[in-house]
Image 1 (cartoon, rainbow, N blue to C red):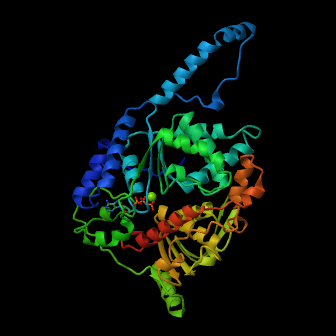
Image 2: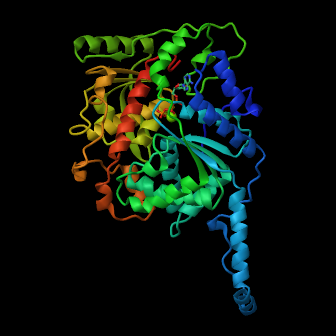
Image 3: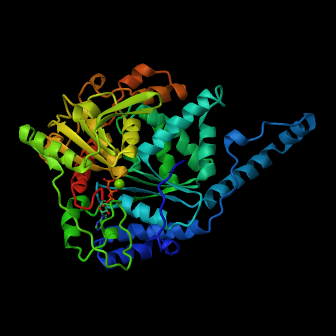
Amino acid sequence: MSTTSSSSDSESLGPLPVYKELVAQGSLKTDDFQMTIIETLQEMHDRLKNYSPEPLVGDSEKAPEKGGFFSKISSIFNKKEDERLAREAEEARRAAVPKGLYLYGSVGTGKTMLMDLFYNSLERKDKARIHFHSFMLQLHGRLHKLKTTTHQHQDPIPFLADSLAKESRVFCLDEFQVTDIADAMLLRRLVEELVVNRGVVLVTTSNRHPTELYKNGIQRESFLPCISILEENCIVKCLDGGVDYRREKKTFFHSAKPVDKAAFSTSTMPSVKKETNAQVELVDEKRFFWPLGPDTKKEVEDYFKAIRNGTPVQEKRMSFLGRELILPHSAGRIAMCSFDDLCAKTLSAPDYITLADSIDTLILTDIPKLKPTTLHRNETRRLITLIDALYDSQVKLVCSADGPISEIFGGGSGAHSADEDPSTMGELTPAQRQMMDDLGLSDVTQVKKSPIFSGEEEKFAVQRAESRLIEMQGPGWGL
Ligand SMILES: Nc1ncnc2c1ncn2[C@@H]1O[C@H](COP(=O)(O)OP(=O)(O)OP(=O)(O)O)[C@@H](O)[C@H]1O
Ligand SMILES: [Mg+2]
């Protein structure tokens, strides 16, 4: 499992002192809501620091039932007692596992930043921090490998859980979301195998309370056990101070002087400033060009020419799971693509993550004003997923669009009406199709009708995308 990992000078202190220091330095604003969360994270840190998990005995590793006649007779006599002892041992094992954290709330309130402070200050080797989309991408890959190689005729999920838990006992998963049936079915099983059967501690952020996950999703009742597991095994906390710091960030950072590069980190987690006199020249350059027309086209082309600085423009081809993504205008780690190139084709999270990993700057041209409720449902989802992937990889994004950011997603809400015909919504991507096959879920007719986002999920997704687009215009982004 690949992880985002970094170290800081303050690793051994835990997240609370680091947070306090960032506030004292002026890198973070005082926020009482965040303070209560960071105190919880500090307690978890202290407990996890010295926590030695039980050795792993996953379902897939349990020995097959052995024994002849005598052992069977004795097992009948002792069965009740054995069962009681086994139950008690199991309860003790589960009670010894520290609780995780499920942190939910509105966009831009600092959930990811706090989780990253926790992650970076936790001195354990068996930890992982990953964004939800990348996690699902890795799961798809591992699952497919298991099904096509070693475990063709077996249930692959316990093996998948074994391999994940062997690598990491503390899992920080950013942006937990369940938007389609393929993910719902996989997560339902995997969360149980990891958290309940293998004692993996889950720390996760989300825009939604657990009971709101996958709301209105197809076959939601099958997903409900996953919600119970999350509620039983994680402390559920809301972070909602009513401030979207992304919208504030530009002004805030402009006022935070003198500065060093650390304070302008493009990561969600500001670093503790080191003693340095280094000054960073922040160029408040224009990155969002509108409206569409010949003037904007020229401005964007000039921008591309200026930043590629003589590097020749070429076509670039990337492939993932046998699919090819073509970037028509690419210069080193800079790509210029139209909205239609990236959002009007059946691309999905894996393609966008692969793209985001291979570039530093994307110039995305000709974004129309979207009408998420009617015409552009799929295009809207893809644009949101693309923005998520670019944001997570801290790619610099330059856009030309038919209107300002506030008008791209049709004025904000993005939620579809309850009576919308689900058969016109969503699509089954090749990756989802493959995963359904690997999971042995054959009811593809149902899945075809499965919404990629439920109404509420989409509303948050649109808010998040707008909030991110705004932060990505800031002078510190993509340095
Ligand atoms: N107290 C604060 N003072 C100043 N900036 C902050 C503060 N808290 C968070 N930020 C900044 O606000 C931005 C958004 O924070 P973050 O990404 O953690 O939000 P989030 O709650 O995870 O949002 P989303 O739900 O969209 O994922 C980050 O750049 C972060 O560094
Ligand atoms: Mg976040």
